[in-house]
Length: 282
Ligand SMILES: [Ca+2]
Ligand SMILES: [Ca+2]
Image 1 (cartoon, helix red, strand yellow):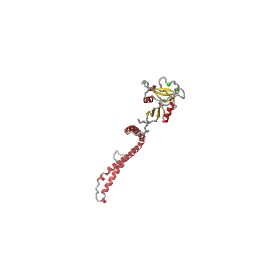
Image 2 (image 1 turned 180 degrees about the vertical axis):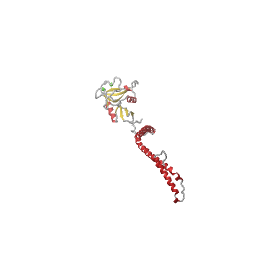
Image 3 (image 1 turned 120 degrees about the horizontal axis):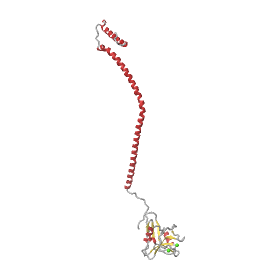
Image 4 (image 1 turned 135 degrees about the vertical axis):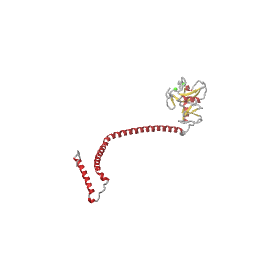
Protein backbone atom coordinates (compact mmCIF):
# COMPACT_ATOMS: atom_id res chain seq x y z
CA UNK A 1 0.00 0.00 0.00
CA UNK A 2 1.22 3.48 -0.85
CA UNK A 3 2.16 5.93 1.79
CA UNK A 4 0.00 8.98 1.88
CA UNK A 5 1.58 11.96 0.03
CA UNK A 6 4.31 9.87 -1.61
CA UNK A 7 5.27 9.94 -5.34
CA UNK A 8 4.48 6.98 -7.67
CA UNK A 9 8.22 6.24 -8.10
CA UNK A 10 8.75 6.20 -4.44
CA UNK A 11 5.60 4.09 -4.01
CA UNK A 12 6.98 1.55 -6.47
CA UNK A 13 10.31 1.29 -4.74
CA UNK A 14 8.55 1.07 -1.41
CA UNK A 15 6.21 -1.73 -2.68
CA UNK A 16 9.20 -3.62 -4.00
CA UNK A 17 10.88 -3.44 -0.63
CA UNK A 18 7.64 -4.77 1.00
CA UNK A 19 7.39 -7.60 -1.49
CA UNK A 20 11.00 -8.53 -0.92
CA UNK A 21 10.40 -8.65 2.81
CA UNK A 22 7.36 -10.84 2.33
CA UNK A 23 9.20 -13.20 0.04
CA UNK A 24 12.01 -13.50 2.49
CA UNK A 25 9.58 -14.21 5.32
CA UNK A 26 7.84 -16.79 3.18
CA UNK A 27 11.04 -18.62 2.51
CA UNK A 28 11.89 -18.74 6.19
CA UNK A 29 8.43 -20.26 6.99
CA UNK A 30 8.39 -22.79 4.08
CA UNK A 31 7.63 -26.32 5.45
CA UNK A 32 10.35 -27.94 3.35
CA UNK A 33 12.95 -26.02 5.07
CA UNK A 34 12.11 -27.79 8.32
CA UNK A 35 12.73 -25.03 10.73
CA UNK A 36 13.00 -21.38 10.75
CA UNK A 37 16.38 -20.27 9.53
CA UNK A 38 18.04 -17.80 11.77
CA UNK A 39 18.19 -14.44 10.20
CA UNK A 40 21.64 -13.01 9.98
CA UNK A 41 22.12 -9.54 11.35
CA UNK A 42 23.06 -8.45 7.85
CA UNK A 43 19.88 -9.83 6.44
CA UNK A 44 17.78 -8.02 9.09
CA UNK A 45 19.40 -4.65 8.22
CA UNK A 46 20.10 -5.08 4.45
CA UNK A 47 17.12 -3.13 3.13
CA UNK A 48 18.00 0.27 4.52
CA UNK A 49 21.59 -0.24 3.42
CA UNK A 50 20.54 -1.01 -0.11
CA UNK A 51 19.03 2.42 -0.36
CA UNK A 52 22.12 3.88 1.19
CA UNK A 53 24.24 1.91 -1.25
CA UNK A 54 22.30 3.30 -4.17
CA UNK A 55 22.67 6.78 -2.83
CA UNK A 56 26.33 6.20 -2.17
CA UNK A 57 26.80 4.92 -5.73
CA UNK A 58 25.11 8.01 -7.04
CA UNK A 59 27.31 10.19 -4.92
CA UNK A 60 30.36 8.29 -6.16
CA UNK A 61 29.26 8.85 -9.74
CA UNK A 62 28.81 12.55 -9.05
CA UNK A 63 32.16 12.64 -7.32
CA UNK A 64 33.78 10.80 -10.21
CA UNK A 65 32.31 13.24 -12.68
CA UNK A 66 33.48 16.10 -10.53
CA UNK A 67 36.99 14.66 -10.35
CA UNK A 68 37.05 14.25 -14.11
CA UNK A 69 35.87 17.81 -14.57
CA UNK A 70 38.41 19.19 -12.14
CA UNK A 71 41.17 17.14 -13.75
CA UNK A 72 40.22 18.41 -17.15
CA UNK A 73 40.28 21.95 -15.78
CA UNK A 74 43.71 21.65 -14.29
CA UNK A 75 44.90 19.82 -17.33
CA UNK A 76 44.12 22.87 -19.38
CA UNK A 77 45.44 25.31 -16.81
CA UNK A 78 49.14 24.68 -17.46
CA UNK A 79 48.54 25.88 -20.97
CA UNK A 80 47.65 29.27 -19.54
CA UNK A 81 50.53 29.18 -17.11
CA UNK A 82 52.85 28.15 -19.92
CA UNK A 83 52.30 31.59 -21.41
CA UNK A 84 53.71 33.16 -18.27
CA UNK A 85 56.48 30.65 -17.75
CA UNK A 86 58.67 31.81 -20.66
CA UNK A 87 58.60 35.35 -19.32
CA UNK A 88 59.53 34.15 -15.88
CA UNK A 89 62.15 31.90 -17.36
CA UNK A 90 63.43 34.76 -19.47
CA UNK A 91 63.59 37.04 -16.44
CA UNK A 92 65.39 34.31 -14.57
CA UNK A 93 67.74 33.74 -17.46
CA UNK A 94 68.36 37.48 -17.85
CA UNK A 95 69.16 37.65 -14.16
CA UNK A 96 71.53 34.75 -14.48
CA UNK A 97 73.23 36.27 -17.53
CA UNK A 98 73.66 39.61 -15.79
CA UNK A 99 75.06 37.92 -12.72
CA UNK A 100 77.38 35.82 -14.87
CA UNK A 101 78.56 38.86 -16.82
CA UNK A 102 79.27 40.71 -13.58
CA UNK A 103 81.23 37.72 -12.32
CA UNK A 104 83.23 37.51 -15.55
CA UNK A 105 83.96 41.24 -15.40
CA UNK A 106 85.12 40.96 -11.81
CA UNK A 107 87.34 37.99 -12.65
CA UNK A 108 88.77 39.88 -15.63
CA UNK A 109 89.62 42.83 -13.39
CA UNK A 110 91.24 40.52 -10.88
CA UNK A 111 93.19 38.89 -13.69
CA UNK A 112 94.43 42.27 -14.94
CA UNK A 113 95.42 43.28 -11.42
CA UNK A 114 97.28 40.00 -10.95
CA UNK A 115 99.08 40.47 -14.25
CA UNK A 116 100.21 43.94 -13.17
CA UNK A 117 101.43 42.62 -9.85
CA UNK A 118 103.17 39.77 -11.67
CA UNK A 119 104.94 42.23 -13.95
CA UNK A 120 106.06 44.29 -10.95
CA UNK A 121 107.34 41.20 -9.19
CA UNK A 122 109.21 40.07 -12.29
CA UNK A 123 110.78 43.51 -12.58
CA UNK A 124 111.82 43.42 -8.91
CA UNK A 125 113.15 39.91 -9.38
CA UNK A 126 115.16 40.97 -12.38
CA UNK A 127 116.52 43.91 -10.41
CA UNK A 128 117.64 41.65 -7.59
CA UNK A 129 119.43 39.28 -9.91
CA UNK A 130 123.13 39.58 -10.25
CA UNK A 131 123.96 41.91 -13.12
CA UNK A 132 124.90 40.05 -16.22
CA UNK A 133 128.37 40.40 -17.49
CA UNK A 134 128.26 43.02 -20.22
CA UNK A 135 130.33 42.10 -23.17
CA UNK A 136 132.53 45.02 -24.02
CA UNK A 137 135.27 45.66 -26.42
CA UNK A 138 138.77 45.18 -25.20
CA UNK A 139 139.92 48.26 -23.29
CA UNK A 140 141.80 50.87 -25.23
CA UNK A 141 145.47 50.93 -24.50
CA UNK A 142 147.15 54.05 -25.86
CA UNK A 143 150.70 53.66 -27.13
CA UNK A 144 153.52 54.79 -24.87
CA UNK A 145 153.61 58.59 -24.45
CA UNK A 146 150.10 58.90 -25.91
CA UNK A 147 147.28 60.21 -23.69
CA UNK A 148 143.71 59.01 -23.72
CA UNK A 149 140.72 61.33 -23.84
CA UNK A 150 137.21 60.62 -25.16
CA UNK A 151 138.10 57.62 -27.28
CA UNK A 152 141.23 59.13 -28.73
CA UNK A 153 144.90 58.96 -27.91
CA UNK A 154 147.00 62.14 -28.19
CA UNK A 155 150.69 62.59 -28.63
CA UNK A 156 152.53 65.80 -27.79
CA UNK A 157 155.66 65.62 -29.93
CA UNK A 158 159.12 66.37 -28.60
CA UNK A 159 160.62 67.20 -31.96
CA UNK A 160 159.61 69.92 -34.40
CA UNK A 161 158.43 69.72 -38.03
CA UNK A 162 156.62 71.97 -40.41
CA UNK A 163 152.85 71.60 -40.55
CA UNK A 164 152.74 69.19 -43.53
CA UNK A 165 155.55 66.98 -42.18
CA UNK A 166 153.87 66.93 -38.81
CA UNK A 167 150.68 65.65 -40.45
CA UNK A 168 152.70 63.04 -42.33
CA UNK A 169 154.30 61.84 -39.12
CA UNK A 170 150.96 61.55 -37.39
CA UNK A 171 149.58 59.55 -40.32
CA UNK A 172 152.55 57.22 -40.14
CA UNK A 173 151.35 56.43 -36.63
CA UNK A 174 147.78 55.81 -37.71
CA UNK A 175 146.78 59.24 -36.51
CA UNK A 176 146.41 62.81 -37.77
CA UNK A 177 147.02 66.30 -36.48
CA UNK A 178 144.55 66.90 -33.68
CA UNK A 179 141.00 67.86 -34.60
CA UNK A 180 139.52 69.81 -31.70
CA UNK A 181 135.75 70.12 -31.59
CA UNK A 182 134.96 70.89 -27.93
CA UNK A 183 136.20 73.10 -25.14
CA UNK A 184 136.69 69.98 -23.02
CA UNK A 185 139.02 68.49 -25.62
CA UNK A 186 140.80 71.85 -26.00
CA UNK A 187 141.26 72.15 -22.25
CA UNK A 188 142.49 68.56 -21.97
CA UNK A 189 145.20 69.20 -24.58
CA UNK A 190 146.02 72.58 -23.10
CA UNK A 191 146.70 70.94 -19.77
CA UNK A 192 149.10 68.48 -21.46
CA UNK A 193 151.17 71.27 -23.02
CA UNK A 194 154.22 72.59 -21.18
CA UNK A 195 154.48 76.31 -20.56
CA UNK A 196 157.31 78.26 -22.14
CA UNK A 197 158.30 81.60 -23.64
CA UNK A 198 156.25 81.00 -26.72
CA UNK A 199 155.53 77.30 -26.74
CA UNK A 200 153.67 76.55 -29.93
CA UNK A 201 152.12 73.28 -31.28
CA UNK A 202 150.63 72.51 -34.65
CA UNK A 203 147.17 71.01 -34.76
CA UNK A 204 145.03 69.88 -37.67
CA UNK A 205 143.56 73.01 -39.23
CA UNK A 206 144.47 74.96 -42.35
CA UNK A 207 143.13 77.52 -44.82
CA UNK A 208 145.82 76.78 -47.45
CA UNK A 209 143.22 75.69 -50.01
CA UNK A 210 141.05 78.82 -49.73
CA UNK A 211 142.06 81.80 -47.66
CA UNK A 212 140.05 82.25 -44.52
CA UNK A 213 138.08 79.08 -45.12
CA UNK A 214 139.52 76.93 -42.41
CA UNK A 215 139.15 73.20 -42.65
CA UNK A 216 140.18 70.27 -40.54
CA UNK A 217 142.54 67.67 -41.89
CA UNK A 218 139.59 65.36 -42.48
CA UNK A 219 138.12 67.96 -44.85
CA UNK A 220 135.32 69.18 -42.57
CA UNK A 221 134.93 72.97 -42.16
CA UNK A 222 135.75 74.70 -38.92
CA UNK A 223 132.83 75.88 -36.81
CA UNK A 224 133.75 78.38 -34.13
CA UNK A 225 137.15 77.67 -32.69
CA UNK A 226 139.28 78.91 -29.82
CA UNK A 227 141.21 81.75 -31.50
CA UNK A 228 143.10 84.37 -29.60
CA UNK A 229 141.64 87.80 -29.93
CA UNK A 230 142.64 89.22 -33.33
CA UNK A 231 143.46 85.79 -34.80
CA UNK A 232 143.54 84.38 -37.40
CA UNK A 233 144.93 87.41 -39.19
CA UNK A 234 146.97 85.82 -42.05
CA UNK A 235 149.63 88.34 -41.06
CA UNK A 236 152.49 86.86 -43.17
CA UNK A 237 150.57 84.42 -45.33
CA UNK A 238 149.58 82.28 -42.40
CA UNK A 239 147.61 79.23 -43.46
CA UNK A 240 148.14 76.75 -40.61
CA UNK A 241 146.83 76.77 -37.06
CA UNK A 242 148.77 76.28 -33.86
CA UNK A 243 148.23 76.54 -30.11
CA UNK A 244 150.38 78.84 -28.00
CA UNK A 245 150.92 78.30 -24.29
CA UNK A 246 153.19 80.93 -22.75
CA UNK A 247 154.32 81.67 -19.22
CA UNK A 248 151.61 84.29 -18.98
CA UNK A 249 149.08 82.65 -16.71
CA UNK A 250 146.30 84.94 -17.89
CA UNK A 251 146.27 83.16 -21.22
CA UNK A 252 143.55 80.55 -21.28
CA UNK A 253 142.89 77.42 -23.29
CA UNK A 254 139.83 78.70 -25.11
CA UNK A 255 141.72 81.70 -26.53
CA UNK A 256 144.98 80.10 -27.58
CA UNK A 257 144.78 79.53 -31.37
CA UNK A 258 146.92 81.44 -33.87
CA UNK A 259 147.65 81.16 -37.56
CA UNK A 260 151.24 81.01 -38.80
CA UNK A 261 153.19 80.17 -41.97
CA UNK A 262 152.89 76.38 -42.51
CA UNK A 263 156.67 76.16 -43.16
CA UNK A 264 157.61 76.91 -39.57
CA UNK A 265 159.08 74.01 -37.62
CA UNK A 266 157.08 73.51 -34.43
CA UNK A 267 156.13 70.69 -32.10
CA UNK A 268 152.76 69.18 -32.96
CA UNK A 269 149.83 67.28 -31.54
CA UNK A 270 148.78 63.96 -33.06
CA UNK A 271 145.38 62.39 -32.43
CA UNK A 272 144.68 58.69 -32.87
CA UNK A 273 140.99 57.80 -32.79
CA UNK A 274 140.44 54.55 -30.93
CA UNK A 275 136.65 54.01 -31.15
CA UNK A 276 134.14 53.77 -28.32
CA UNK A 277 136.00 51.76 -25.73
CA UNK A 278 137.31 52.03 -22.22
CA UNK A 279 140.80 53.30 -21.77
CA UNK A 280 143.37 51.81 -19.49
CA UNK A 281 145.30 54.51 -17.63
CA UNK A 282 149.04 54.36 -18.16
CA1 LIG B 1 145.57 82.00 -43.93
CA1 LIG C 1 148.23 84.92 -37.11
